[in-house]
Length: 478
Image (tube, rainbow, N blue to C red; front, side, top):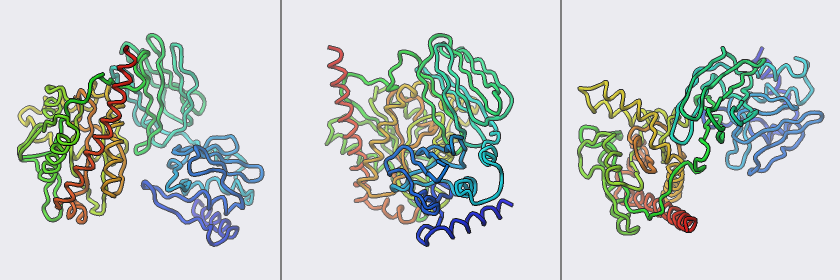
């Protein structure tokens, strides 16, 4: 039946549109999308949006659909509908998941007999399952994560003074209750309200500021409640200049890291690049640099940030090269630490880099397991998460602009090597050694110089930002 419906809708749209408005699909982030402009053309209307708009509107006689950039739900004639993937804007073009065509377009054309009005929306709002409810307390905020079977729509109903309420559309499952008692959040209650669920967060004192994010891959709702009185920036900026950067060349010794098709070893590549960066930073920025390793030897992951902490470093930058089973994977990406990975691919990269722990404390697996658990839910680094995110953005922009290489973006995941750092910390993946073309470039000394200069440019830009904030902090303290 579904195949017949899709075929019928496709024939209807093709007959109503010109050849250049056919609804061809494009692949993006693992999903099939169609261009909203073409959907609008097939309905003999226009899309009300620009590439920079936050929202887009699709109007036909008697109907209006509202789309929100990067959200996985739309509003059809005033009723919310959950989509299979977020609405995206790529190269200035609004994209909507392909199933939208079969589920919504017939209703907008009024050209098909079928379910009564609202039935498609009700079907789309079927109960979503709850896979996991996680809670974690940090020094400056408490995080609540609901991992679900599909992306959910939510609405913040209230945020205080002693309770916050978040309604989650169509979330099924049994009621849940969790005691927290972390000095800020007293308890969390997940309750049934008709076809929806309401998450009640009870505070021990005053309610804090709420930051909510609906993420995909896997679908989850992340709620961060910041403690009252905490800096909204989420980090500390000292009123002193940048004095010391620790550069960390990944892997080493018995741990070669990733290996390219012609034998290029990650440990050799990143040590060479790290030394080049260190020389440039010393010469151009006048900032002292220390290396976590300056030779082909193995350094345990926790010792790398411990080294930075002991030396009171201001920044920690770990340099790596990427690997993927698909040899065509290319580009650079930069990570900062978080207990919640951006997506499954970020989680896999972290797992790959974290696997080196198998070389550590082999005789004491219990110690290693406890260490791993502690790092994933690290308390110290959370203070610097915002600054780490900013540093990652600046370095990533510099890398992609200077090297003219695919931009894989800034991501977050549970990298053990970043855990425990008492300063902003990032991990840079400078390219894929498993890609034959990139491996060839990464072998070239001139290209390694280009990488080093790109990282230097990012650090220089961050230093300018840091100096500006330092001056502002000094002025405020007068």
